[in-house]
Image 1 (cartoon, rainbow, N blue to C red):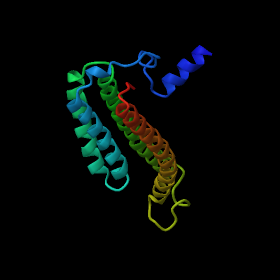
Image 2 (image 1 turned 60 degrees about the vertical axis):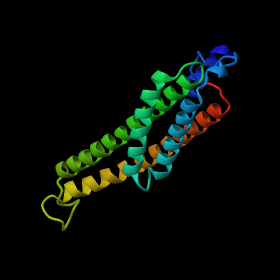
Image 3 (image 1 turned 135 degrees about the vertical axis):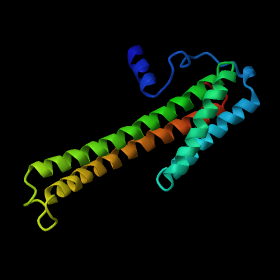
Length: 178
């Protein structure tokens, strides 16, 4: 049973060193740093809300959050705040890498669709749209597939992101490490 619980802790993002039954050293929590940690969670929350409607504003919030996280992680002492700053940093990189993967996948699928459409002879696929109608039809088909995959991955990403922000806020509010 113990290995199963360890696997669940790893999947849920719990550091095995902090997922113990010992009480954290709450006396070492600096209130100004705790407020900054709350602000960084707030920036992540704001980025979640802005992510669909204003992605560049969400990106700016996340850049500010990651810079603050890296700067303040060095100042944090004790058992609680360092884990929150690391959690926030890991959350940022998870979101950034997933978004980069989505963009690269979209480009690859659209490019492959265009190449396949061009190689397939094109005239029958894109009737009436000129010499490269097949490539255009392929790009459109690849883009549709990429769009469906993008939506699915984005939904999963947002669920994961919301989970990490909410869990972090609850644990920080309770003065517990994450």
